[in-house]
Image (cartoon, rainbow, N blue to C red):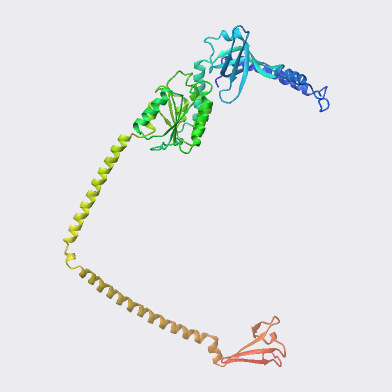
Length: 444
């Protein structure tokens, strides 16, 4: 928000009020209560109300900004009542002020106006209600509102809500279109009339809401949420006719802009006329200059699409005829070639080539097999000559004994066995078993 020209005075007054309230709270909170409340000795309502009032009355005056939602100033009364609402949240407070103070404001206040009040919180014992007692009321001017919108524009742009890459394309032919606009408004008629003139079968779901004033933003947000959850809606259009800067303020509201950015359904903004550019135009997926333009852009033109279909059919017909003519000419050329006079000749020549290649392959395979068989016989002979069987056949034998673990081992030294050890002697044609009677050393 833009700091009002009286910001310094506002800060100092609010600081004094808050400091006085905090100091009082610290002083009171540091002392134990003189009288405790129990279930047997509860406090009366008047005592609780008085204590609450004492705390609230210690608070200082503060500057408060909000939007006027209700004004009650009856003739002949000295006090006027206002309801001040937070533009960005569902929070409101009652403000009382002297009736002459309200009458002195030029131009007169009306519902929906933005104001800044200098007020002190007040608690009324009789009704147990909290309100603000205003001693100064200052309307927020157009320049101030425009400056705030510009600051909000920079904030949303920095967060990426205006980025082109996050904007979604509208479907070519939406099965359902949601329209949020004022009741029986010219914007509603323009959108419906132009859309149905272009595509008579288009289906609209119209939700009428306030499009200016304090109720506009909450109602539009609720309607947007309802349409966004409807699976039959492919596009949502928010439309309003032209108006003053104050009338179009709801469409630059931060809450509405963020709701549109969070919507899963593409949103079309059609607010005011071409020069009007609320923040909703930058956040929406498509910005239309007028409601009439929105009716033309959300659906295609049935006449244009019919003409396009006829053109595509003509192009397809010409392309198919051209392809058939080309294939017919190619077939005629194939018929006129000499090869077709003797269709079996090329096949026979290919068969002879295949037979030759088969014979060559057979001879190559036989040669390879003969060569490999010869090499295998030579390797077998070498293996037989070097193997233990051939050695045993020459009169040698292999003597084995069992180690303590019971495994057969080849006897390589007499020191490995003792007298009486069982032996296993393997010769070329079998195995013989023996017993060592004695063991002698090398007798060479």
